[in-house]
Image 1: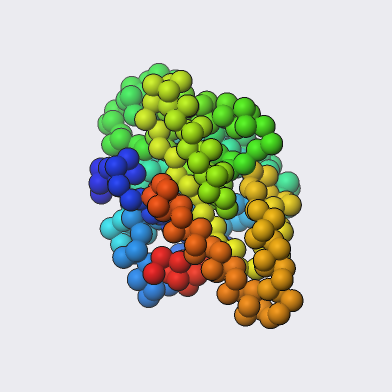
Image 2: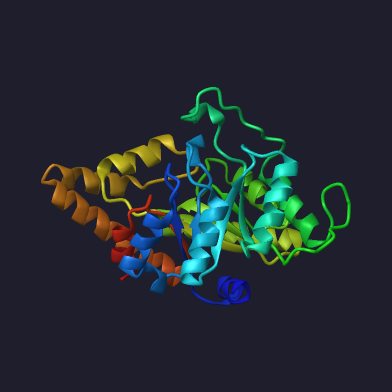
Length: 300
């Protein structure tokens, strides 16, 4: 399963779809919705998020296991440094490994300040680079304390994330280079809304690989926008994302006509961008905040 997944990542078209578990003891409704829409036939794999914005959700590792069991497609399970110390991180990775959850997206995690759980505190023994190091160590047959594993892991595939945009290109380049140095086989960007922006990220990835003699693959993040308020929120409030003024102006003009026109314009902009990104670099991670009908419309 994972061998063909990684081969597609490195040599072919590679499209993944993000899923966000809910605050529920059941992930089955999400799986059934994906199945009903036939999305498993349109993507190469899935991802599961790990309590984004520190809001309580169903566990990402279990969700990944259930997606893989149902669809036979590899799933990238997110793990956040916010909620686990190095003991728990290693323990979770060992357990997930036997369940064949072996693609891990390493995140530092959002601050517990945003949590919906009163008095929740972040752990943060390190940032995402520590988790990348843990994966490298486990792949080499020992734990972080250099104790040999009784039974070795099946290879774990470490992924990381990067901002899509920064005022300082040098700072962004440095962050990307460090994640390659710590063993990431792929780096997924925040959503990209401009083709020139995507080209700059690809150039940065090439430079990061040159500096580390690496072969890390950039995956372009993609989040379709169909509402003016979404465009404004992402551009003004989410670090690392740049929404072109032309998008905002087009959505603003459409919103004055009708909600239907606003959606039509946003969808057209988003669909065209998807096709342009796919032609430029067919490695794309689709995020829709579980708007799976929208994902299908983009992919169809």
